[in-house]
Image 1 (cartoon, rainbow, N blue to C red):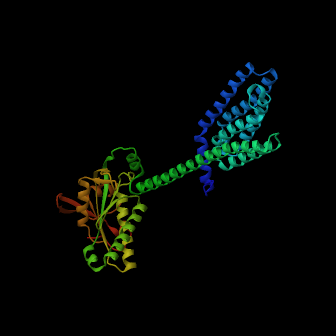
Image 2: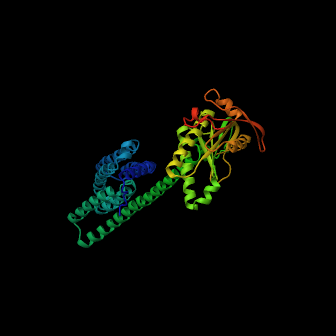
Image 3: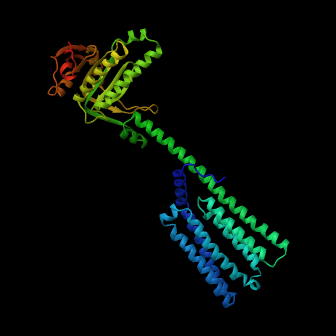
Length: 422
């Protein structure tokens, strides 16, 4: 019935957030009470005797002081974090209200309202005020309101009135009680539903962001969220193309399910190698794997890291082939040059790269031997001081023309037993 959240942290977050949000309303209600009491303080001397004015002003002064205290308290974290303070606040207001009822009851001959009537009117007003003033603490409100109801019942029992009058009076007061209780419960119920919906929405937003960050660099994801067009230019990126050798033959030998499983394991190995060497995976294209070194998410990497990544994946795939007894090999082509990177389209976001450098890298990969690494002249010039290469070979690449190709000495660079690949 009270609808408390099972998780204590969630409950605390809700209560604090709701109390913080409703502080302006609490101050407004307290302000209305202060203005009302001040108006009566100014009006009463025109009709009440001096003793009655003093008694009323004393009770009203205490009430106003309590309301001012409420307003001051709302400026503190204590009010936000300690919901039980509402019990103390409205207990103090209850005492002040009883004093007001007593002072006004003494003036029944002038006002025409008995102490009996004053009690039901003023305590009813306090009950309704409390239904809004108890913020996100329905159980505290019910405890406080229950005590007030018992006190009022005790007042009726000892009053010099007939049983019928007492029954009708108590029924009238319980109408205030029921209405105020429903208001407090319904406000809290609706607020909890809104909070739960907000929590669910925030959870989905985080999942969406996490998914976005899994496919895009954080800076790119942030720019997309802000509605910016994502287009970047890079002057010196090493593009790495990796292809599975003899994939068509492998596809004929394996069932579709097994083939997909092998592809997944090979690409997972490539992902792990990319993480170890700091290069940036771009995408898979059929049985090919595309990565870059020096792009959006790998700006501090270069040709050396690209070659280290190629060596790592060749070694790892060799181990995989031995463990699975599958004839799986890869070949790697690397070319270094300018590219353009960015995100296009509005669905299935991916940060991609374009430019002639991408095309050349794919052609260079076609020249590499199974289990080997071939690089273009630009990559060779970037990494030649750090590692040994074979001599230059002239090759004519489709759509590119005649280019110099260099091969990696795997025995020296990749730490393998085999000699250089010819």
